[in-house]
Image (cartoon, rainbow, N blue to C red; front, side):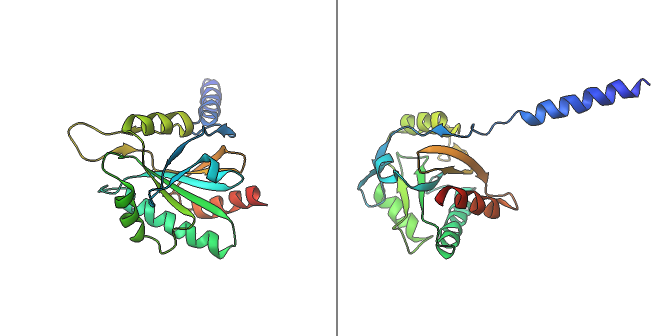
Length: 189
């Protein structure tokens, strides 16, 4: 008899904890922004109106997660093209003091031959992108004073045509491509 209340309490705790999530609530509005793309041209919210887009945060001299994230984004670009889904890709640099549009353009060519729907953005201060990432994507960006590496989130963020963040995907999850593809289909039809 003593084990039953303990089990009930544990089940209740598991249910409560599983309902808590660190992911952004569906429908969070992305604030208006205009930055510079890898061509040095203004690019932002206005160009993404009525478009489904996938965002991430990377930086060009990253020694850990950025190369595989960018490779994954390139694979997504191909997958969406193959499935005839009109999606834009936006990679915000987490290190704008280093990543100029010229550096981002060179970086982009290492991953894709088609930059028509993939925009690598800079043209803001480190403080601006830190606040932008936190307020819009609930993601951290932090550059320690003792390192040239930047701490940042590693998810892909799906933004609907109405400019609302609808979901996020971890690129290391086994089923994320399938799940992302299916979710995008819901928002592009």
